Image (cartoon, rainbow, N blue to C red; front, side, top):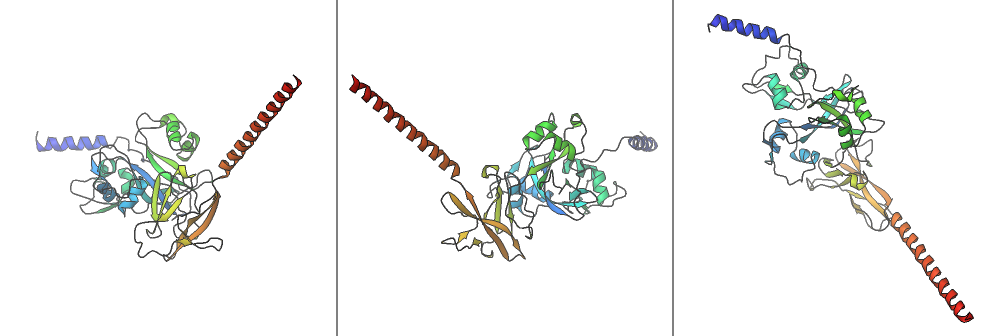
Length: 358
């Protein structure tokens, strides 16, 4: 083929491609909170090739490896080189930023362009279609998506939200829809309703759900005693995840098995420089350390209440009854036992009376 013919073929190909429909945004999460509002968010990453946890941490600019472990409820001793096979879901924790009515990741992750890269490859392959190349171009003010240079830093705008759902503060999770799944099945899996998912995702017909679509799923967060004045407020932690806060001095974990109450205790990091973490109260014979409880039915727990100016950790005493049900059951058993004893004595007296009459 001559050079002129090859050039003509390329021009025709480019012309034809220009008439193809442009892919729509991978996801647009509503974020009606005031501009510059930030919060913790999660998104599912499904690697297209086998990789490691540490490589995923690097790709998404997760500051600390333990933060990635907490989002996936992995043991803190997990090896960074742990293999992650193709297609295995890993939850990515990141900070969400609300602006112009939508939510995107707050200036991170940032990807450094390498030789052979183009925006479509970065969006569809490296970041597994969590974003589109148009979204990357828009936030980075790239007028011509074909013109990127080696070494250029690109902000990857992951979808997210900080909005309350049905009056409750939640952790917004970007769920990647699996083939054959449904809105109802996803709602059931994550403890919400189909109506809620349809509403917050702007879906009118659940049958239009597509595989690999990124769906905004609100995750219930554990209740806590964290003050609104705390530097980490609101501390929202979803089920089966944990976070480190107060300059890594405190580890807080959420589990539905603990009545959806946030469980916080001193972490194993930076303990030599962490401030005191204990509760003081005249009603207690001794000071309680953070996360510890008194014994007995009316347990008093030293709960985490936040931290201020990076020098003081706030605590509060929380009292709850753990034996009321057992006591009620014991009382019922005792009453039932007394009734049986009374009946036995009554029958014995009747038999004795009949024997005397004979």
